[in-house]
Image (tube, rainbow, N blue to C red; front, side, top):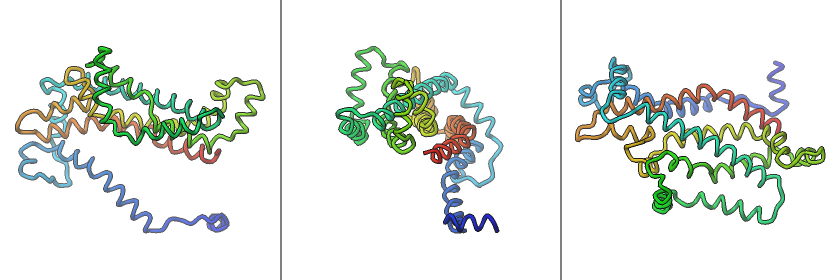
Length: 285
């Protein structure tokens, strides 16, 4: 009774059955493609040819199909996996750091041209990335970076979306009075950022790191152009499983499942901490 009174006094209502029904349906829609991939990975090619839409019960060929991925001729799975980890971690850390610095500057510092520069950065998000592929490839060729991971890492070290994301977050979560108090206490601008802005920005920066990691991990278009099949990332390497006239769907889906597992583990490990951190940051803001 006490909890009900508190909810009524604060205007908090418990979600109804319709809300839970919508959430359950949304979860099922989101999870089914992954489960469908798991079903195909556990089937044989003959079973898939007979029944393109498998039943809901997994078959017993999962381990053998996963083993086939590691032993596919011309596919260095572990090399591609290490390349993807390097690219994703470096890009995610760089985007989180630089976006937090830029977001602090745009949100809390006063300088000429601040609004115009921020508007220009946001406007670049409207330009399709495909339009810059040809000049970007020419630049990479001039630098001699084609076929090397640095050609994939460098273009993704900064993000216009990340700058906008952190600017909007710090505008509301970090009171300007805290920055002024730090400056009065003798902190330099960078010290104010490190001791005041960075703790407040940590939840949003963590989410930005996660989003960037997922995007970098699953990017296929640019790595397939600049790297090719000699030194590929994981999405490019999995394309080698589709060579030939007859595609082995059980083998392809097994590779897709292996490439998805690290992302699932990452979400399971840090998901709860990220949500709690965002809620704490929202309460503090």
